Length: 203
Image 1 (cartoon, one colour):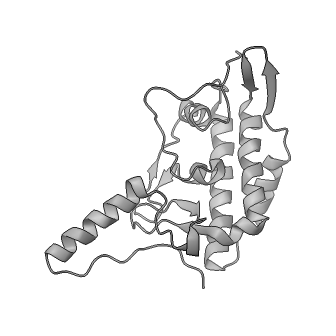
Image 2 (cartoon, rainbow, N blue to C red):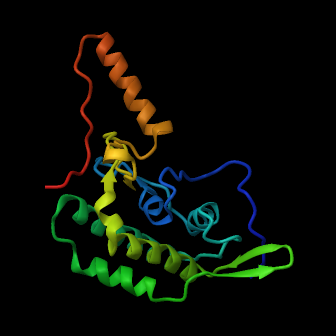
């Protein structure tokens, strides 16, 4: 596989990373989950490769194939199922832990120091293992109590609320937060009550 040195991301981004957490941003590759037709952003192996590079998990496109894409989608949905169960206090699908642990047990991406910088050589399996390990650390540690879902009804992005007083309502203020504030402002001007946040909530 071709070696590339890790540099700052330049140019157009194909994917969004509102959380700053690779596992939770990975969950967000399926948009508007509760809509009748959620929007899938990982439709092709190329989409997965692009996400892994833009997320900083791999420096070069790992060369994913359809089986890698299927494994990635299974991992993503397992992470979401476990996060959702944690947030609402319900039981999770037992298979979700099996899928997550199986992927996390595979060899992860191993950073290597080269004369010109850091090299991340990653196969698709290694890259997904690194994502899975981040999810295990969140779900198995104290940060699990900080998991929330964005309050914008069309979003459904999950994130860690590390704000003072745990009052964060949006996955990102620059996107969903500003959109909801604009909607609330227009609603007040029309004399209507503002929209209430719609999210998964703990019981």
